Each structure stands twice: as structure tokens, then as C-alpha cells.
Amino acid sequence: MKKIQPIFKAFFLALVNLMHPRVIWLSLRPFLIVAVLWGALIWLAWTPALALLSQFLTTSKFTNWIEAGLIWVGFDSARIWIAPLFFVMLLIPLIAMSLVMLIALTTVPALIEMLSRQSSYKDLDRQQGGSVFGGIVYGIWSTFLCLCLMLITLPIWWMPPLVAVLPPLLWGWLTMRLMSYDALAKHANHDERVTLLHRYRWELLSMGVISGMLGAIPTFFWATSVFALVLFPIVSFVALWIYSLIFIFAGLWFSYFLLDALKALRDERQADSIVVESHLIDLELPYHG
Image (cartoon, rainbow, N blue to C red; front, side, top):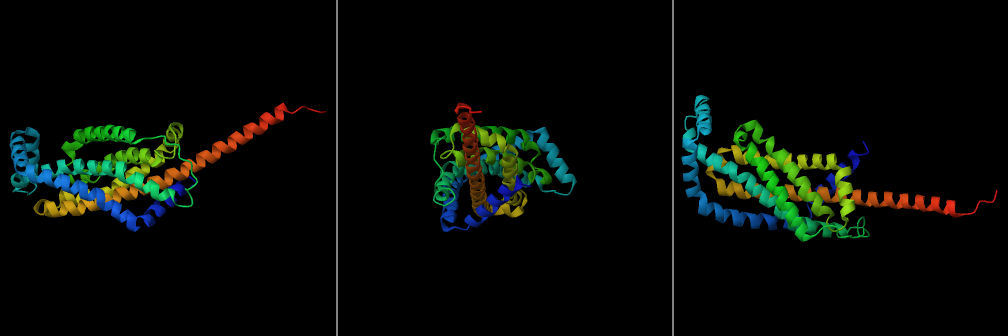
């Protein structure tokens, strides 16, 4: 129960701070950047990408089997919308990954600055164990690994139950890695960061998976709804902003949890050092029996 209490405490603190006007603005900034960049890319590439994808799906034995199965269960017009559906499902993880990486690199440091002014953390020593360059390298490597896992599992993403299961697992793992690094980059040194990430690895993974499950809500609607195909640009903007809020909530959650864990670790080490020093003093004092 003691291990769960800090998770719930950080969860509710993150939920309260999510309503802060500055946090709302911080959720809009990465959303607007990603929306403009991906919107321009989709607008330029939609028609040729659909043509290439349709040609690939027509000649692929695997997708022919999927199409035949969909027709068999009653979706007679599967050939018309299967290419747009696959294209949307390809775009979802790429857009979400770029958004969570942008939030981790640009928004989480701003959240840490905001939390550092709170009375609970204003006296927490900054040991600068991470850097902007280190965060970029760590983020690119983590995103690359997640992308590889996504590509391996992509053939079964079309199945409605799995589209709500696989994204939370992948986003959970990626969110855990990105948010943990950036939440500790300014305050923890390398040794402290390694210790905390190892000590609380299962708690952090659970938090990441829960964040991924929250992110699966817009993912599920985006990937399975007919409106997502018909009104793709509008639905995409709404889903992106929901994604942004969820990932920023995750950043707050990880930040509160790890900053409290860092304080506890330093208090623990300070207490241990005091005990060791007292033992050394007792050994050095002459014994008068």
C-alpha cells in the first residue's frame, strides 16, 4: 500500500495542475506545431500516398485475405475504404510519437520549472544530470525502438480489440522512457537517475501503461470511426489536442512522482551518511573503561 500512495498522490496533483491556465497553454503549443506540420504533410501526400497504398494492398496476399474476411462478414465495400483506413492507421502512431517526443523535449522542462517554484520543491538541489542533447538522443533512440515494435505489430492493428490494447502498451513504454528522463534531467545526477529508474521501474511502467490507456481513447475513435475517415482533418485536430492534454498530464504525473522519489532518496542517503559518521566518531573516541 505504501508503494501505491505516492502514485495516487502524484496522480491527483497532476490532475489538479492540468487545469492551470499555463498548463492549458503548454498543451496548445505542441498541438499547434504538430498539427501544422502533419497537416501540411498529409495535404501534400494524401492522394499519391493513397494511390501507392491501394496498389500495394491490391497485390498483397495478406491484405487480400483481410479484404476477403471483411467482405465475408458483410463489409461489401471494403475495397473502397480499406486503403484510407490503413493509411490512417499508419499515420496515427507516427503523429502520436512525434507529439509525445515534442512534449517530452519542450513541455516537460517547462512543467519542471513550474513545479520547482512550488514550496515542496523550491529547495531541491539541481544537479543537472541530464542535458538537452542527451534528451534528444535518448528520445530519438526510444522513439526508434517504439517505431520498430509498432511496425512488427502493425499487421494485426486492424483488428478492433487489438487497436485498443497494443497502443497503450507501446505508448506506455515510450511515455515511461521519455517522461522519466526529462522529469529528472535538471534535478538528479546520473547515479540518482539510474537508481530511481531501477527502484521504481514497475511503478513507472504502470504509470506509462495507464497513460497509454488514456491515449487509447482518441486512438480507438480515430482508427475505427467512419467519421475519422470522412472528416479526417477535423477529427485529427480534436484527437491531437486530446493527445496533447493526456501526454502533458502524464508529464505532470511523472514529474510529481519522480521529484518526490528524488527527495526521499536524498533524505535516505543523508540519514545513512549521518549514521555512518556517528559510527566512525564512536570508533575514534578513546574507550575509558
